Structures are given as C-alpha cells and as structure tokens.
Image (cartoon, rainbow, N blue to C red):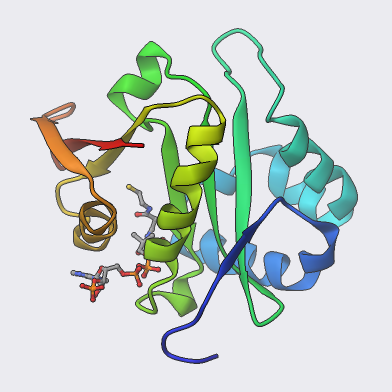
Length: 175
Ligand SMILES: CC(C)(COP(=O)(O)OP(=O)(O)OC[C@H]1O[C@@H](n2cnc3c(N)ncnc32)[C@H](O)[C@@H]1OP(=O)(O)O)[C@@H](O)C(=O)NCCC(=O)NCCS
C-alpha cells in the first residue's frame, strides 16, 4: 500500500469481509473497545448479519442508544478504517464519545487515513441535520488531536474525568 493513500468512505459492505476480519484481529491485539461484545463473533461467523446490524444502527433508537451511521474507509479494495456519526448527543456522549469516533487499522496508521475519514464524514454529518459536531479526545492522543485540528476542530474545554486517566479534550467543528 502506498505511503499516502486516497481513501473513500462507504457504508459497511459484505464485499470487504476478508480485510475487515484481518483488521479486527489487529484491533483485538491492540485492545480497542469498539468491536468488543457480540460483534466479533457475529462478524466471524456471519458477516452478512454483522453488516446488516451496522447498517441498522442508523435507525435504531433504544433506551440510551441513539441512531448512529457507520462508514468504512476503503483504499485499494481493502478496509483501512472506520468512522461513525451519532445523529444526536446523549448526556453520556457529551462526556465521552461525542458525535464522531474513528479508528485506523493499526498497521496502516500515519498515512493520512484518519484525516481523510474525518474530512469526508463532515458533509455526511451535515446531511444528517447537524450544524456542529462534538469530538472528544484524550489529551495524550497526539495523532487524533492533529486529525481534529486539521479538520477545523476548535478546542472548547478540557476536563479531568478520572484522575488516573488522561484529561479529556472537547472539540467542536462547525459544519
Ligand atoms: C488517532 C488515529 C485514528 C490516527 O489515525 P491515522 O490514520 O494514523 O492518522 P493520520 O495518518 O491522518 O495522521 C494524522 C496526523 O497525526 C500525526 N501523528 C500520527 N501519529 C502521531 C503521534 N504518535 N504523535 C504525534 N502526531 C502523530 C501525523 O503525522 C498526522 O499529522 P500531519 O498530517 O501533520 O503529518 C489512530 O492512531 C488510531 O486509530 N488510534 C486508536 C483509536 C483512536 O485513538 N481513535 C480516536 C479517538 S479520539
């Protein structure tokens, strides 16, 4: 894969089964939380059902769960990252999570993928009716801070949520 690669955002699709499952194994090694839960087993056993669940999240509203649009970044026919947009904030998301979250496949970091994912997700957020979006980020996450600031993020607040954890930054991007 080229050092700087051009990515495209697409809705989750069964066409990317192989590279998505490889990516999940990389994320599992890293211990990232977003795939933990029943999702991993379903993804391996029944990828079509996994994809259907991801697509259904866009209209699912259940207790504290609000609709969420998942988008996958693909390049050179491979899954390279994911980004998701909550259609609205809950009290919990205002504290942690915000509207938008993203991850780049660990072995493909540092090639501009997250920067492109966020840039391409912002117009999608606008079509969902949002006029500004909240992104929350650990103060120690230099790469994510850079991604957000390169996409016009304005730092509104920094808070200590847990004294044993890095402080949280609260960025807003106007759409
Ligand atoms: C944060 C993350 C999404 C960045 O993904 P990426 O595809 O590597 O990001 P990019 O390649 O677009 O790089 C963004 C910028 O960060 C810089 N950067 C990358 N790693 C860095 C690091 N460890 N320290 C400082 N800057 C770093 C890059 O140089 C680039 O800046 P530049 O364009 O000025 O050179 C990725 O590290 C990741 O998935 N982390 C785990 C999940 C996570 O933290 N998600 C965000 C939660 S808020």
